[in-house]
Length: 507
Ligand code: HEC
Image 1 (tube, rainbow, N blue to C red):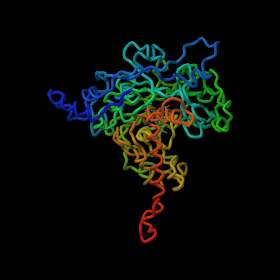
Image 2: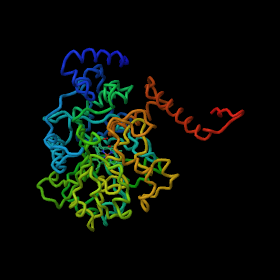
Image 3: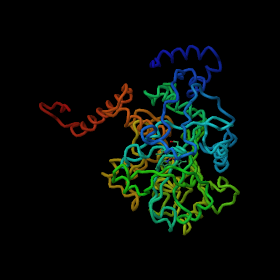
Image 4: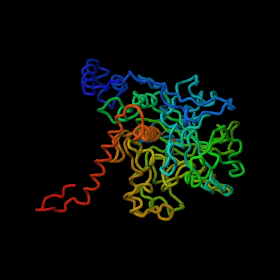
């Protein structure tokens, strides 16, 4: 596959673009649809990604399984589909956020569910609009302690394994670990971005998310994701899960990550069990937002009004920024609160839900750092936008606690979240979508952690020493990056130290 000559194509686009007035004016704004389309690669190869974990390598459903098998919707459009008259556009913005956040969140949910419930989220059958899934989640390593690839998609609905919630996360009756299994569905404008990165499925280009190399590496405006998060939690463990929407999923028999990760691989054995829909995450690119994105979430409450489980999903909150200057001590009295949300102006929290879900026997805490929004099954030391702003290639730690800096600074988020704010608050910044979070990254994945993780999964297999086939260009880029990072770090120890004759010490 030929590599596009960006410079020539860009030069051509300026010539063409400025002969027509509409394109002339749009080129002044950030990577308009016309520019993205003009520079988009159209010679893309589709249909090459695996659907589920170890497909055709021992992971196929047994012959006794007669149900539907998950297929990744991966026929990404080569031309940017036009914007729709999205329902959330009706809601005006003030100071980078919607004036009616609850209505905005509802509009997002309605759009995400439309036509998808009817087809049981086998989204390629949706009659209203096209939906897609992210590549390379069939083989997925969620955290470093997990055995490589084992978190990959199961074969019934394509769910990946996520957070393990330790005992007592949801309520007093939940004693042991419960697992979260989830799947995200992307609209056509988001799918276009994915398709540009993976135009050549064997040689992804993370920097081509926006085909315009002069722009930020963004998804186009109107890109949207709905993510369904299922838990293995039972009604006995969590009474409010009664009547939740259920799926069969082929998941780990053993729910304890410490047991599984001690190995051998057979401890990751899967079988088909019920999982219950406990959370719905929503994410949209809306240029009016402070960061370019809004992330919101719903939690299931079996006691809520509504004649279907979908209607018993309760809005928990919406975030469009992290309020990067508001330290922990300014909002929360201590590690377990109480917190004052008024200073966090770049989010909306459903305060009634906060009270309802934290009243015994429930223990739900869907709030993250300093009272910022996070989901019930998310890490409470973080926030939606905090984790997502880090998305890029290569991946970086999504929380201060996971970074090497964290261990040197002896962070103790359980007891002292208010200390070491100079490092911690970096994880609660407002990275402009399409710019990298850290100088240890080469490309932004514009708040998409599935895009970031998928690329990391790709290199973990395709750049391995025993990998077969042509070597993807990303492998050498990553190898060079590692070498230069290592020498830059080593040089810190000799920087400014005189060597023989007063000369710098050569690394
Ligand atoms: C502790 C870090 C963390 C927090 C907090 C978090 N996420 Fe995520 N999120 C992830 C990771 C990692 C992925 C990719 C893995 C996956 O989806 O399997 C992801 C994936 C997603 C996706 C799929 C598209 C994408 O960007 O990859 C959506 C939508 C999403 N999250 C929304 C939310 C919302 C809304 C919140 C807050 C309620 C939230 N997330 C909080 C880490 C986080």
